Image (tube, rainbow, N blue to C red; front, side, top):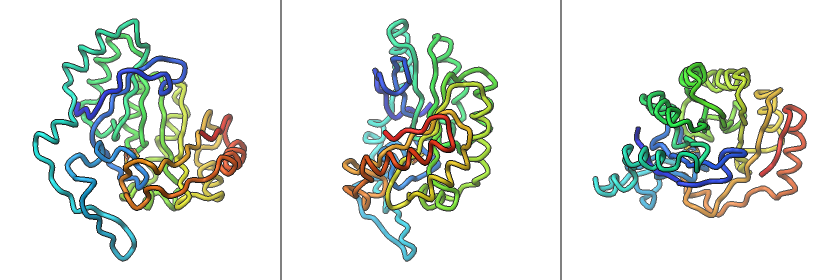
Length: 256
Ligand code: SF4
């Protein structure tokens, strides 16, 4: 597994449990608001030039890091398992996030090893690989799933800055909702790409779901699209109004 980082302790990332967070490296999306640029595009410098084409799509002129710099973002798997073994009975759970964990061919094997240590496992995913999600569920390797819904269908490609087959997102939503596992959907709310109509559109996509969290866009950190840095997010009041609309579609919708 290509591991980009490890957070050894968290009270927030697995509801009701103490967890460690493993950040896998690499992603098949390139969300404009992503605040993990070094996990998504580890070979490119984020302080290099940005090109903008006529359609206002952005792309990078990447500056290759040296091998030493690349290695800085890798975490050795043996060290990781030594750490997890040393925390048995101290931590309850492991959160696997990214990047996008499901793009890694050895994900099933990797989670199987973690489950052998008797940890609960939560997967954070962008939902682009429904087949992998289904396999993990069928093999009983997951205890909680959090899936990002990036935008309404018509804005998806623009927000993630990649071409994607939207049916895969819909398929993942269905698989997760019928999995009998605890789960949540999450949407990062960025004023540039999100208004009230999007709450209705996404609400339809996940109608009947258990939980939908609307996350405030953070702009005070390095983002994949640096042009969004320091852009304003919606006010708490506006976020709560969106959540009120979302509540019409799911059992629980909250702004956070
Ligand atoms: S799916 Fe997640 S990790 Fe990948 S680019 Fe989007 S926000 Fe970043």
